[in-house]
Length: 472
Image (tube, rainbow, N blue to C red; front, side, top):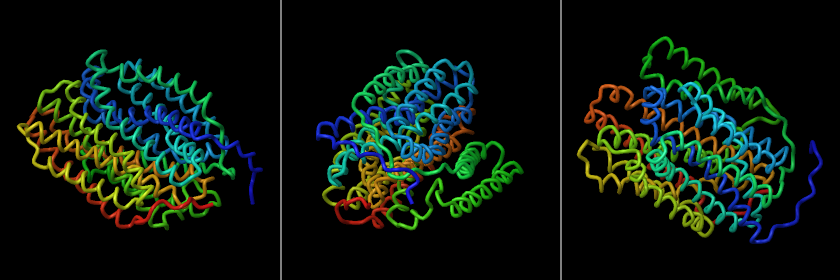
């Protein structure tokens, strides 16, 4: 039974109106993607400015991604219930104010706390943007192309973050990577008010507070263990307590979700192989991307002595590959289905990781740039088929929640990638051994290659045909 009356459907948008909505949402999504990676290239400068070590710097990145990941699903549900445009605008305001707090942070603790608040605002943008786009594009093939463009902008923002960050830090210092958000937020608020229509899900859902608390606790504990494990010891009493709490929280979350009529995360969705593999694939892609970005940043600055600007410029091939291939991937998904783009994505990511498994302080720059280009191409090909596979076949009224689950998987992957990469290098950076740091990155490049190979498994599970109509 419906718990609220269905809203009056808005008048259909014109073609120009639909693609204007996409452009506005893409601008806002650019903020989320950039802030996931822009800080990476500035971590050494932030560490010097605030007197922070490697593990503290990992929290600067992961405080944002963990909080965002834990709140994405409830933000999607709130958007379906109270209005997607309304929640989207609230997210922009919170994100903008938190960005100003980051720029003014006097200490590492304040910066980490402000980054966590940034994550709260970002959680209201990512799934809601996708839901707005899906709602504005009723035709499945047009939607596939739109998601390709959306994924292209998101991919560009993720890959271009280090480039942008390097240029800003070189010119204005590390705080500028947060100041830059203010004018973009103001512009996005104006554009959303003018061009984006309000929409809601067809059915209001009650909030699942126990599920939300347990999900947040499990994600924070898991990432905290990955970051702090090398310091406290993987078999220390503190770590063992962390394992027990994580296991208990996970079991409690599953039990709570299975017993609720309207759970935070509909675990029944994971019985659909296409949905489950899309979520796992999204996690793997972002593990690979964020492992690459952090390993590359620390290697180039600490081992090769590059400046933040040069380090950011080195990621240009990655940004180029992601930008060019994401819309192409969306077109391929619309015409041929998700399997072929996923095979291309997996192959390129695996090739990029394998190129760097022998990394040392004298590895040729062309090889490094080629590896980053390959990973960027793979990233560009991956997002559209994964997003489409996750959303297709689900009721349009659940598009916010479906997009939120996939976005959660992405941010969990980002947090895990940062934690793993930081853990590999945490003991070599204080020792100041450039050759040792280069060797310490090698397991990370194997992980990147493994993530690419896993996408081949995802491709095999994905449907081979063109995009089907979304279920009602």
